[in-house]
Image 1 (cartoon, rainbow, N blue to C red):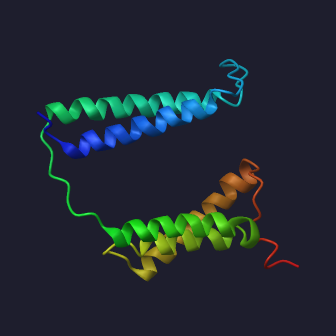
Image 2 (cartoon, one colour):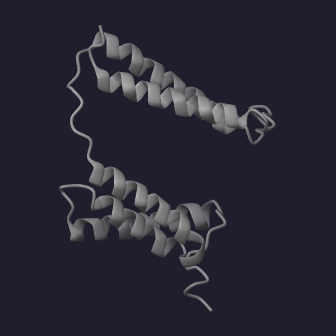
Image 3 (tube, one colour):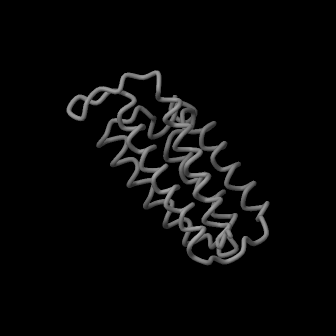
Amino acid sequence: MIRSMKDLLAGLIYMFFGASAIWIARGYNMGTAFKMGPAYFPTVLSTLLILVGSISVIRAFILPGTPIGAISFKGLFLVTVSIVVFGLMVRGAGLVIALPLLLFISAAASVKFRWQTTFMIAAGLTIFCVLVFLKGLGVPLPIVGPWFVG
């Protein structure tokens, strides 16, 4: 009856995270479309995530898919470690150190990992994030953290 296990599991994961975010935001003020409260944007995005997950679940029963392959434990481990390292380092070392570390560690999970390509992507993405998030949107993270600036 299930024709694509990948679509089914992906849809259920999307729906789980969407429902979890709505549940977390339930205690915040919703506001209106013109004066958004702290729950408004996460609730809208979570609702869209649940919608995408629902479409994926329905699709799992209609369209055939490829079987699920073996789990890449190396990839799972390295991506998880990269996120933890970023979270632990971003405030102390700053974004220009933590973001490239995140990218290099997570990129090492791929069999197509290349130092030069990853370096160029890390440089470009770091510059982009500093300009957009730190300078443009005013996200309160240090560019270079107190560990490197006296």
